[in-house]
Length: 212
Image (cartoon, rainbow, N blue to C red; front, side, top):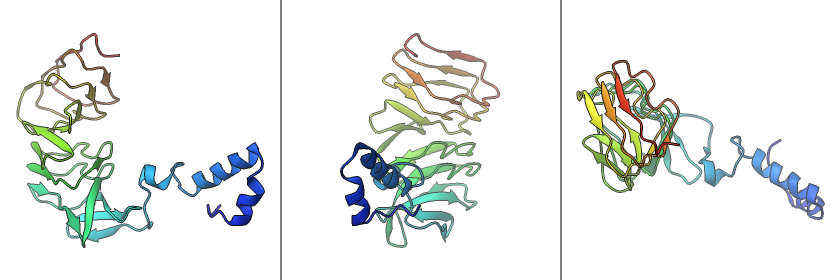
């Protein structure tokens, strides 16, 4: 159950289809999420570390995943490095229920996990344009085809999603209370789960036939 494969194990398993399956299983068990360490970004250690306003873990490649923001600043700038290691990942729920102003994401960030900003109170999200894009404070993928997060405290009462967007990510608008109207352009094919969950004042939304 340790997930360690020694040469004897390899020799025993090398000559059969069943053995091949066993080897694959052992490799998968080595990573608790069920896949390779590189694919999922498993942590080197189990413990959560703290530096300033951030709780974080060290990833397999010696970069950092922010697991939780614990500060109280109105405007938040995510550091590009913590203790000399590059910050590359914003973890699930890392900024949930935090923030009141602007969130600034550095160019070092290459991976933003689902629900990273769930119920956060930011009114705009800015990025150093390297791996993501911000349009009027709304977070998109670099190629602008995925709408990742709409800041929940944006004061606008209506929003027109830009042409070219194909995917609205899960929880992208979750908890947005100011919007009462959203226009989704033709070309959007996927609206993921809970994209508009708990949008308490949303009364009008147009969904094109392109949505599957």
